[in-house]
Image 1: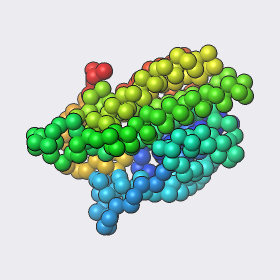
Image 2: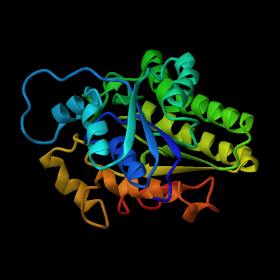
Image 3: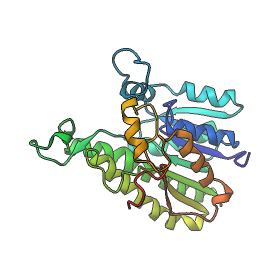
Image 4: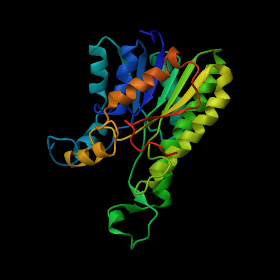
Length: 282
């Protein structure tokens, strides 16, 4: 129970199949009181096809988070749910006030929430590989930036400000990126805004270090959060040296390491957590 009496804020944690939910569970298992922040997505049309794919992923993102909270509580942990629109910069600051009122000052911040809609820089007469991908436009790019880059930056700055104002000497920030951040054809806005998050994280690690805060990045490969259909599995397995699709707990356990005392001398680093998927990319 290394994190006993610590307070953690995990964004994007309502999907019961998701990385954020797994992170919340493992931090709670280590003794932290966890605030799970989220914004519900639109529920998918039709009935559950009974197997992973787009429907299940959308359904998970549309959930109210109660399944995540209930699982933590059933295991003896403590968790609170906070609905918030991180695309609203005012709400980023208010989020800390809401969590402090529920659990106390935040000492661990995990920026996991993300916005992703496939897009491309290719022209209208693009090759068939890009045909089902929307052309990049200002509205779409701004939507990605608001959640994937601006919100984590504002949350980190507010986390640091409150940390210093109360004279704290211990803090942890972990930002969740993607191993496609350095280049992501067909998801160019998503990849670019996540790559910007990695740069912000390194700057934060430098600036927050004197206050006793470490800042690191976890960059997952393909993780089964409900979106990977059966026909996608063989290709992912072939592209992954460890030979399987990743699970949310694979990522959550690394986050737990980064917020522990075992990682006290580690900051400003990006850890690729994908079984070797896309190994060697920047």
